[in-house]
Image 1: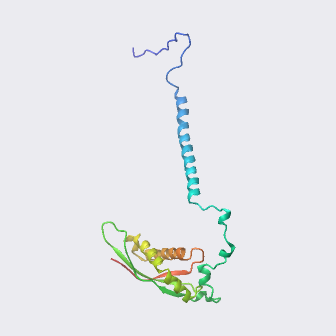
Image 2: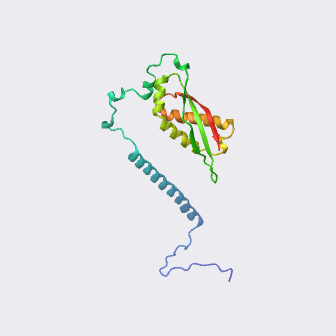
Image 3: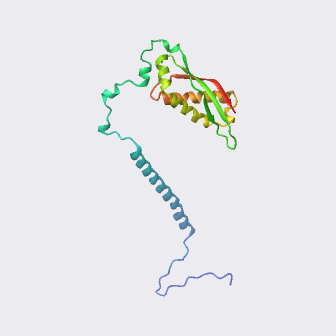
Length: 198
């Protein structure tokens, strides 16, 4: 009985019915299309979502939003700061002391903090009197940026001269990016007066 072959019986109307099971080759063809269909649907939905978000949050350039030529002639902060600087004054570096900042380090399970007092090394391309007034005005922003940056550090990333040099570089880049977004980097370096981790 184990060797019996299944034999298809002819249908009563004389037409043979195909076997109930499909051949493995046909199943493989149908199964290989499904992942491609899923990928295509995901790509289309993602593209549609991206276009939708772009329309919602993007700024379209409509005729009403065309820039006003008179408004473009108002001087930027960079142009105002560099207006009275004589040619060749780029070598006249000046310094601006920041107030000390205390921030908790990103250390789970322990309360550790860093106290940092920094000095900004400013380019001579900015007049010292105008630059000092500008930086005094921006002190709350500078303190905020510094506190957020220091809060993201852990104890290991504050140890050693390589880490301190990296910290100086990253703070300098952040300050230049936020204070002078549409112009030249006027902060040439960050000097550390105090950097105590407890």
